[in-house]
Image (cartoon, helix red, strand yellow):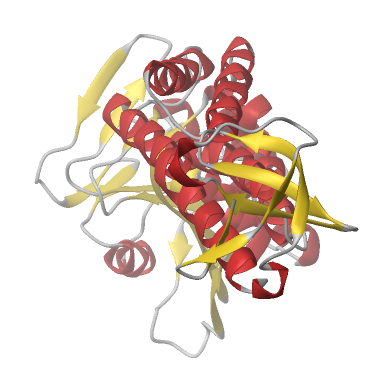
Length: 378
């Protein structure tokens, strides 16, 4: 059923080291880079068994192709166990391994013939592959049974046989290979939900910095989120027209924050924001959960509608309540901030005051400052 790539072994392979690498989450360049780094840093020989536990929730065709090319350069015996979840795996990827293990419930897709095959709960050792429920059972049976590595060997050669005892002294090391911290972070943000959430949240933090000016920490974090999340755009085929719509929604949100109230413009901003997410991931190579994207758009809108105004109000309250010494001073009005606040200047100091009783003032008009309930007012 599974036709594996031929490999030339003239005798049984006695394994002394087993390396296990887990592909979990979104299969992306983060996994490819981690495997490549491990190959470059280690001397892999025929006495070392390299095992991949494949448990990817989604992948792209480009990612499978890159892994196949990388596996060609690995001369050590290679094995793959697909599981433990009900994983979907490409048949072409399995052909790159010398030994194949599959957990019950795994679905194998042959993209060339557009066929699917699902393995049911029938564990056992078959010709060319093994159906077992755990990677431990896969490795143990791989060593205890005379498992032939392929279905079609090179002409005149002997199919390879793995021979080892998992409990013997010959196995001097079992290594669990993991991606680096940066690679794990990249793998995490490869998920479309987190890609869009971090990207949109980064811009929201920039907007917060515009209205609640501080030491620039929010702007720095926002720039990091935008930079990290945008790294996956090219890998999975983002539609850049969606970015234009996203920037339009961002400008509308800033306009809403500047005037201090929402209304129909707020509904329009939320609608454009969500439409931008649909357009951005329209041609994405990964499966998109539309319900999660609506939830993500709601989170970002909540940040603009509630979180940022709350921070702005608390910042203004802190600023005015700390400046009671300006009570009784004559100030000049520089700018009206909606119907209830104004930016004023006293000598070289600029600060925000409350407008009482919906009074109307003119720019450059001089008024006297009073303090009401701990707030500076005019």
